Length: 146
Figure (cartoon, rainbow, N blue to C red):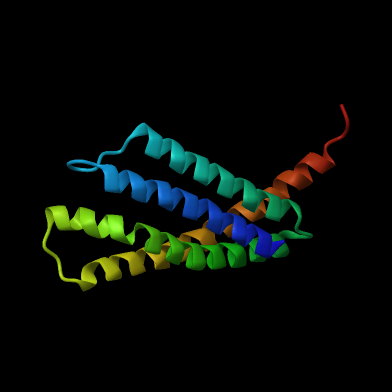
C-alpha cells in the first residue's frame, strides 16, 4: 500500500508542478497569486491528505500509522520534490532571470533546498495525518449504533 500511496502522492505533486510551471511561463510581469493557483494547491493538498488518511485507516496501530506516514511522506517528498523541482526549473530560471542577475548555481541550490524541505514537511505531515487517520477510524468504529 505504501508504494501505491507514494506513487499517488508523486503524481499529485507532478500534476501540480506542471500546471504551476505553465502558469509561471505564461505570466507577464510580476507573478501574482491567482485563484486558479490557489484552487490547484488546495486540491493537491486535499488529495494528498486523503491518501495519508487512508494509509492511517489501514494501519494496525499508532506506531504503524505514524511509521507508514513518515516513510511514505519522506519517499514521496524526496522523489516527488525532485520531480517537481525538475518540472518547474525552467520556468523558475526564466522568472528569476527577468528580475535578477544571479550566478548559475543559484537556481540549483534554491531547488535543492526546495527538495529537502519537501522531504521534511512531507514526512512530518504524512506521519501526523496518517496517525490522525487511524485515530479517526478508531473513533468511528467505537461509536455505538444510533
